[in-house]
Amino acid sequence: MDQNLMPFLWVGLTLPALLLMQRWIHRHLHGVAFLLTGNKNWAVVLYALILFPGVLLHELSHWLTANLLGVRTGAFSVIPRATSDGSIQLGYVEYYKTRHLGPLRESLIGSAPLLVGTGVTLLISFFVFDAPGLAEAVQAGDIDALTLALTRLLSTNDFLLWLYLFFAVSNAMMPSTADRRAWPAFILFLVVAGVILYALGLREMLLTGLAGPVATVFGYLGLAFSLTIGVNVVFIFLIYFVERLLSRIKGVDLVYGQAGEPAGNHPADS
Image (cartoon, rainbow, N blue to C red; front, side, top):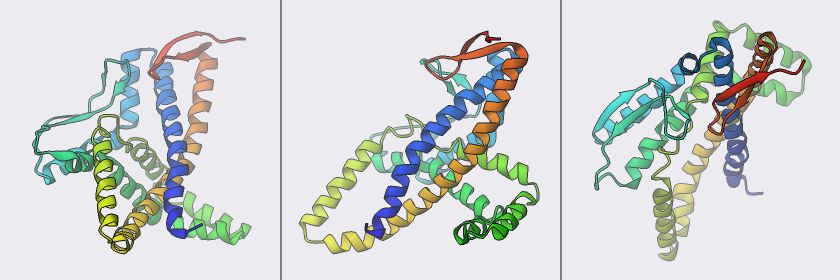
């Protein structure tokens, strides 16, 4: 297989898995908050507080990108609210969509949290968790080297705090449905531009000028997605354990609604 295609395949494999994991995490994190508080309103507050660093970074990314691109912004909020479909919106930024906005600028504004979140998770991975050293130990297959790398990882200063920040940022960086609104038009624009360049005999310029940088971006995205999946596995086990423990203590099991929020509970089987 062409090595230039690997980053795209990597993202194509990790992105669906990451989206499924994040959906499960958001649903069950909200469920744990509901079990802890016993109140739907307070559960939303606790759920939002847990992910607050990531939500704040998400909305700030929208706001800063919009202003840098000369798009006028309106209300900015990181206070959770219920939407018409029953789901929870953890934050939002209003910006004014005029006929001069265009799909390119709107797509950049919508994609900003993903790009910024990816950058933050990679910075934490490389400069705090020493991901390259851990990866080298795994590739070497040396148990002693791997044990030493894991020991260094766990002894990182404020390890739990950094792990929590990684979790909060990575699970709030995905663009929402509204963020992806302009993507189809932008992708169509790129396809048309590519076809025109190809028809004009500029195939080599297209491949050498764009393929390399795009593959690099996708390579970093694939790496960030893979690291996030690894961290999410740990938190999924933790969330599941806490939810089952609280369910057993309170003698109830959660029933999740269509929107993913706890719709109620029923007595647990004894």
